[in-house]
Length: 474
Image 1 (cartoon, rainbow, N blue to C red):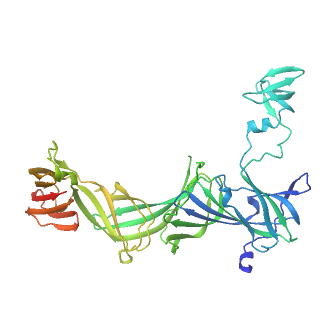
Image 2 (image 1 turned 90 degrees about the horizontal axis):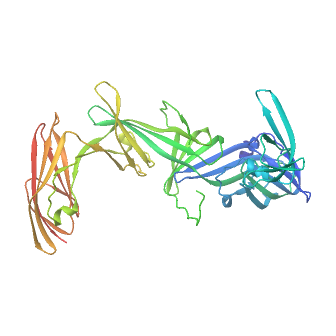
Image 3 (image 1 turned 180 degrees about the vertical axis):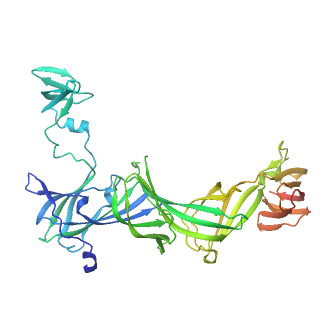
């Protein structure tokens, strides 16, 4: 407890707001009483908030309004405890006040009561104030003025005060029991919806597509309805299971991005079956804000570019009469997430956006792909797009149905390279059932039980035809 108590500043006395009929003292605690806040954000639209405040309470039972909590708080998850005197403080009853103040609700409280109506003429710089009794606030106002009934009336509505039972912002109201004359160091923790984070990556390829500079960014999106000042921030990467409720209450963003960060700002550690990232400094997370913070930067990571053409299982059990036999030649970039490749840290799920300099040294966007959570020493594979200068055409040169469940077909895939250098194209053919390659003019390798792959070198401005015959039994 000694280590914990050092973070608390001198006692901040709560302001006495009212005295309840039963004699209980009603106190308010606001964000001004806060001495520390800890925010853990999950990438499943969920956040864990630990709000620490120092409060002095009268002894006995009383009411405490714990204000400035997230408007998307999950009230059933609230837990309050005294860190320095846990045996002297207990919460007997808790209410979450979310019926917030607005103009209609204020007027509803004054039905049957007198208010003032002020009509101001700005051109004559003259104002007229009349006293009226509000008879109704249902689909418009009805007033009684000088024994006459008015269905509406011009002017501003002036109320004498705010009713005690209306609140301006989300509030936890506790009936507590306190046995200590000394102040409590309260820790209030709760889960809130509408705060989440994701990873975004920038991959800049070199001239030869053999290496890349890779930087990772954390994008934190806070729509929980609260601002967390000077928060200790932790991010949890992984799929956390959440029970579904029968009913759930389900932008303008300020963009904040730190620039030029070289050293890692997050410390990564394994946590349960997930990974946790600790920001090594405090940060303020504003409501309705997207904040971006540098996660890591890797220089000259080795990459490989692949050109791939994919077949389809349905090719082998029917007549193939495609009027346009051309097939897309897909472009992929892959690399190993290993320490000897300038990486080797668990990569949270997110989008990797790829860039490359053109002949004018201007950086251009070339594609993007989404990755799943990727442990260290695993391969990352990104689809960038489709190549422009390589053409693939597929023709079925023979087909016959031997039995109702046995088919034989012959294929010719033509690859034409219009680039200024030789290339290698991978032809990936997904087979199924009991299959046998009867003949082939190019060697292939068996990728798995139902996939074969031809890796074909095509010279610049050249053409190569790959032919093979296959029998498939289903």
